[in-house]
Image (cartoon, rainbow, N blue to C red; front, side, top):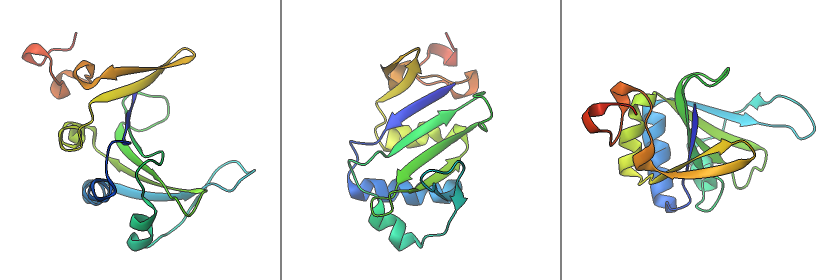
Length: 142
């Protein structure tokens, strides 16, 4: 399962807070994708540079993975770097923390690809496993 949460509604200060909180809870990875080549390279950027390049309106998002192909079960915050077009910051953290981030950063809806179209659903319809169910009576998954 893969679920996407857009972050377009967050201010720059909120995005910076999300970055810091996610780094404190997870693992930071910064990747450079060289145009025209497959694969990527891990790079380093100082936090000051990362924060300067996290901007509202960019393609910032959170993605939840569980039993999804070769991806590890984790939630990832994704920040493309505004001044470095081929560099993206990824922060992976445990899926059990998603509800905390959802409440704090008003993740009110999620997206997923269904066939050839993108579908959007209210967060109230999101559930993962019985132990991490949101808005489900008795914590049950329907």
